[in-house]
Picture 1 (cartoon, rainbow, N blue to C red):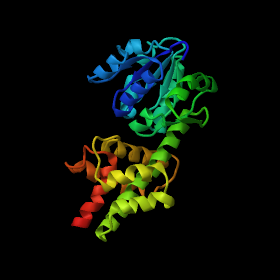
Picture 2 (cartoon, one colour; picture 1 turned 45 degrees about the horizontal axis):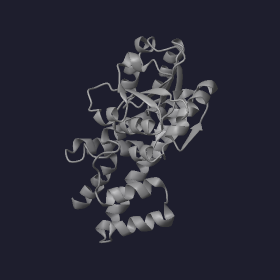
Picture 3 (cartoon, rainbow, N blue to C red; picture 1 turned 45 degrees about the vertical axis):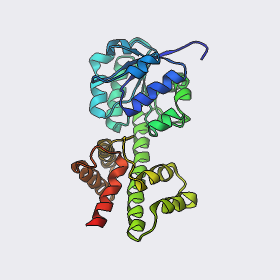
Length: 293
């Protein structure tokens, strides 16, 4: 980057922290802000600057990766958006409900703040490795200006139109498929294990030809080896996404027959003290528990 661009990042969970490192590695000057106290030493050592929220809203681009609707709506309140610099563009990389995404779009428009809904697809390692995918929606002008960021932090992005809620809906659709994959991997692994077959061999067979997607190749070994910590994506966020998916389907007049089953799985996992803090793929252990019972 011939002239460095200073951007802000709001939200330093596992995804946000990985994104902060990616931005620094790609040559951006970076301001960071988190809602709660957090150790930021490694980022500060790399050149990031810890700022207050008011100051974070003064750069040309503000990226956010927040955990849910409540957090996003609280941080980007009417009062806070009124503090933003003229011409700033907020690139919202969080997985939110379509309703929250539209509400945020209205707030940003009211305060003349650019807004691009840009939920990301991938775990923290995908950000680090430059393999992150993004689904974006917003005005053509804002999306075009934001490409200087998209092209540095993602492997590919898809523009699904100007209606911000569409990006959220597409991301929820992706996650719904992924959640099905987690449950399917867990059930099939439990099945072959019960029959005395080495589950590692089974996953090798499964991902060689039949299912070569990243979900099977990535999560399969994690489930086989019970390698669920540290959590790349938490169990609580898995339940949040299932609920968002159900709500979105209801608003569209659609019934998803398997959604209640998947919601029950996440609710059960969150009640289990040994599973609740693990990666969301640990829902596979619920099927293994039933086998043991």
